[in-house]
Amino acid sequence: MQPATRNLSVRAILFGILAGIVGVACGLILGFAVGSAFAAALHVPSREGEAAYFSVAIALIVTVIVTPLSILVTLYWRGVRSIWLFIGLVIVCVSIAAIAASGFGIWYAAQPHVLNLNGPTPLLEFEVKPPAGQSVEALANVQPELDTDRNAMPGYWHTDSTENSNVRTGYVELYFRTSKRLFVLKFTGGEDRIFRLHLPANPMRAKYRAWSQWQNPDFVAKAGEQPTRPSGGSDYQIRYKLDYQDR
View (cartoon, rainbow, N blue to C red):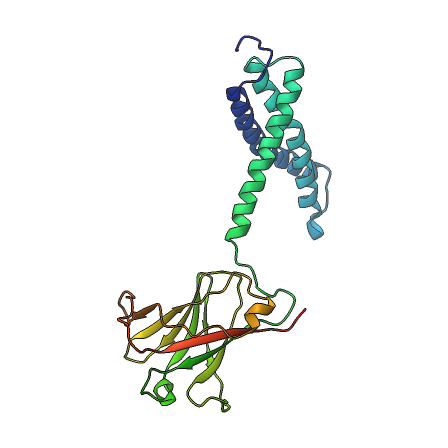
């Protein structure tokens, strides 16, 4: 045991945090075991999960008791006394809560989030312009696709005629909220064109309902090969805009 001190040291706080984390784990395990034993002894019915709810409630109660006790014992062992014990307990509990909130935030940010949870899936309308000297027929067997870090969505060509016969139009669904979106023109037996879309993770704002500027491909790639930068010159171009219903 450390000699008594009149203040808190960083080391004591760190030991307290570690003890609190261990206390939470041990409290949950011990509490669930005790709760299960009591549920069996008291013949708590298992239908509709009543026994499980009872065990979880006991586990939470035991955790609430064990965790602060483990923190106080650890701080006392590190030489913390009198009012500093209470101050140390508060600091440690706040620190553990902040660590838990940060961990949850990191986990939540890593999960896929639907772009329009309470409405229809937004559509990315696009137009593709062939290089100078080529007709739209060059796009006859081209498959558009949207690739993200969450999914890959096939695009679809519009079958109706357009006002501008020099472009081919289509659409693709924007399902997930992510800023990593690549629009791909997949050529059969040729070099695919890859366009990096300049859209934020949540593009459901009025400014993105207007057509973007015409954009050259950022990469070209053959099947099974690494993408490379385009060599320059006239190439396929795209522009796009968002189409969705307001909530």
